Amino acid sequence: MSAAPLPTRDELAAFLLREFPQTRCTIESVGDGEALIRHAVGTPELRPGGTVSGPVMMAAVDVALYIALLGRIGIVPLAVTTDLTIHFLRKPRGDRDILAAGRLLKCGRTLAIGEVTIYSEGSDEPVAHAVGTYAIPPRSA
Amino acid sequence: MSAAPLPTRDELAAFLLREFPQTRCTIESVGDGEALIRHAVGTPELRPGGTVSGPVMMAAVDVALYIALLGRIGIVPLAVTTDLTIHFLRKPRGDRDILAAGRLLKCGRTLAIGEVTIYSEGSDEPVAHAVGTYAIPPRSA
Amino acid sequence: MSAAPLPTRDELAAFLLREFPQTRCTIESVGDGEALIRHAVGTPELRPGGTVSGPVMMAAVDVALYIALLGRIGIVPLAVTTDLTIHFLRKPRGDRDILAAGRLLKCGRTLAIGEVTIYSEGSDEPVAHAVGTYAIPPRSA
Amino acid sequence: MSAAPLPTRDELAAFLLREFPQTRCTIESVGDGEALIRHAVGTPELRPGGTVSGPVMMAAVDVALYIALLGRIGIVPLAVTTDLTIHFLRKPRGDRDILAAGRLLKCGRTLAIGEVTIYSEGSDEPVAHAVGTYAIPPRSA
Image (cartoon, rainbow over all chains, first blue to last red; front, side):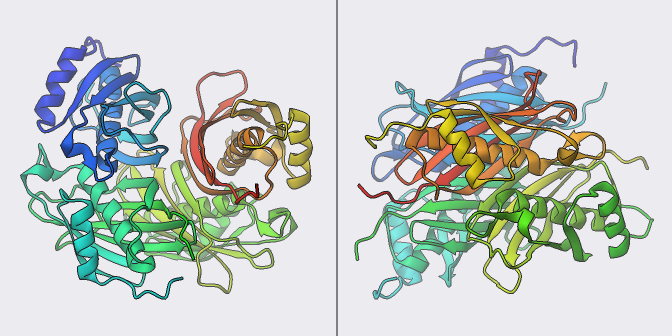
């Protein structure tokens, strides 16, 4: 789609910090339409009962899809989420970071759709699953 | 379903603060399976470009459905979100609070389903729309 | 968006029959970004137990959004559904037609998002609720 | 959960035909919380333009999740779909059957959640992706 080289993990990490200075997400790996994101879990992420709040998981989903997409098409800052469906499966542990594994299902010219599975670090039973769409702004040739 | 009187707005507000001490949501009104929630918008809620972040809107959705539900069935602290689908429609304004109007579509014995429309205060064009499900824990007679 | 007059109910009905010759949906009313669709219910629509099958309701949702959209932007045969989320709320009656009330939440240049509430005729308790997106093909000026 | 042996593919196929006598779905394989379903594609499944209609794909999704679930918990005829989210990714081919690969993400006591990926036979690019929930009726001990 573009002759420019795809961004590296470090370039995407720098972009993420610039665009979302308050994020607690970091990029574990990215490439081939996939991204693995870590969201730190500490006091701000917890709900009474010691579990991770829903909006924290939704933030991780959003970043996982965004980085999977930018790793595929290059840094396009104006891509926006148009829909997100999340199913909460199990209680995440309050003493572990969460990991969000995103994977594009389709990357078209104007829409990209992907799915994300969220885990508590150290467990392979998913705590949430999401699917969402990003709208990609028109790009000049 | 219960002979106990339904909770007032003040009782629900106290409960919300107890269960979610970090929330920036307040209850404008509640009753008849509906709730209107205000989410303050300030620096922590903004993304570069001056718009409200997606997770902030998702947090408002979650609270709007939860309070609509508790206003209908009484304070049941263990109800949990099982799914949430959100469509982002327009950019919310960065200089206005957001208002989330929740309404139950069905309130069964074990599942409650509702929809939420989100506005920037002062505009009647929705910025987001969501639908979600809460699982209600079994209650003794 | 266009100087051409918007299509009438009869023009949309003729289009629907041409494009979906097997449909059992008819248009009750259309206009202002809304459409009310009737789906006949007879033996082909029923499941054992005497209730209307899920795919029948999904077909009605799809037509309700499509006609609401075409009533707003004119007949654009290439618009395609990109996502659909449906919540099943109550058992529809097997001896009544279903009515699907669709309403656009946003009609942009490339995406239209709407919601649909489904009823069994004669009841005002919804049997299903859906939200979905249509992608609109680029139109020349 | 039960001492009874899990149903075989043939038992599930017989059940499917009994409960959905009109279905055009057949079971390719089932087990371990997964099911692979084939939906025949012929004239009744096609839309003008020679593609498979959305409701046909939704019917295949529904059967794939249902059979994956029954293969895990045994034949429980009263399980009902409570929500379904589908993203349409690419045009399915009109001259190929569709295959729906369902997989449970969680199978709890009262709710089971799963995802389904749909392909046109012979291609490994998905044409649709869905996620949905089944409510499982209470079972006596």
